[in-house]
Structures are given as C-alpha cells and as structure tokens.
Image (cartoon, rainbow, N blue to C red; front, top):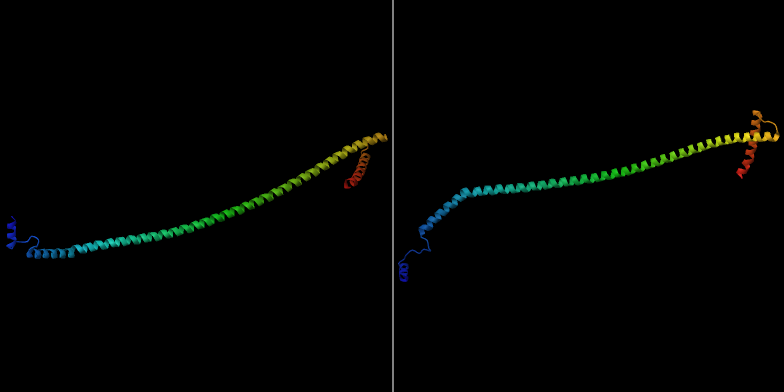
Amino acid sequence: MVKTQILLAAEGGHNPIIPEPVEIVVGLVAFLLLLFVLWKYAVPRFEKVYEERSKRIEGGIEKAEAAQAEAQRTLEQYRSQLAEARAEAARIRDDARAEGQQIVEEMRAQAQAESERIVSAGQSALAAQRAQIVAELRADLGRQAVDLAGRVVGESLEDEARRRGTVDRFLDELEAASAPASKA
C-alpha cells in the first residue's frame, strides 16, 4: 500500500493541499464580487445605522447635559428661595420678639397705672372714712362732753346753739393741744 501511494505521487497526481489555479481564479472573482456587493449595499447601511446611533447617543448626552444644567439652575433657585425663607423666618421671629417686648412693656405700664389708680382710690376712700370717723367721734365726744359739763355745772346745756359752740370750742382746744404733741 505504501508503494501505491508513492507511485501515485510520482505520477504527478493532484496534491490536495494546493488548490487548482482555476479554483483560485473562481474564488478570487467570487470574493471580489462579494466585496463589491457588500461595499455597494451593506456598508452604506451599516454607516447609516452607525451615524444614526452616534447622533442618538450625542443627542442623549446633550439632553443629559441640558437636564443637568436645568437641575443645577433649579438647585440654585431652591437654595436662594431657602435662604430667603430663612431670612424671612428670622425677620418674623425678631418682629414677634419686639412685638412681645412691646406688649410686655404696655402691660407693665397698664398694671402700674392701675396700681396707682387703686392706691389713689384707696387713699381717697381712707381719707373719706377718716373724715367720717372724725365727724362721728366729734359728735359722740360732743354729746358726752355736754352731758358731763351739764352734770358738772348743774344746769342743762340742751340749747343747741350753746351746746354746739361749747363742743366746737372744746374740740378746737383738744386739737390744738394734740397738734404740737404729734409734731414733736
């Protein structure tokens, strides 16, 4: 068997590793024809799809950048509104404190005025009661003095004018005697 193979190779038989020149030419023509068809029809479509995809990606990036810029503007606007709100809240608190202090001062002034009014009313009521008590004591003391004087003198001092004059004179003397003692 080995001899048969050597003989076939020596006779100039076909080598299966090296293709026939006709096959090489047909393969090359078919390859060039396939390359032309691909270059004419498929490559432009691939390029078109690639460009559309690139544009979509670039458009998406631009949209994302625009959205990010808008978000940044919105964030800055939010921060400025927040700062304004905080300043407004601080101003309102300060106004409320000032108003509260003013109300406290007004209430204190009203309480002081009311206290002074009550003290004044009490003093005037006390003065009126004192005057009434002094008048009652004077009348009572006058009656007792007239009764006592009538007993001492032995005559009736029932005459109203005399009695009043005597009582008034006695009380004046009593006040005059007590005034220097109370000043000392």
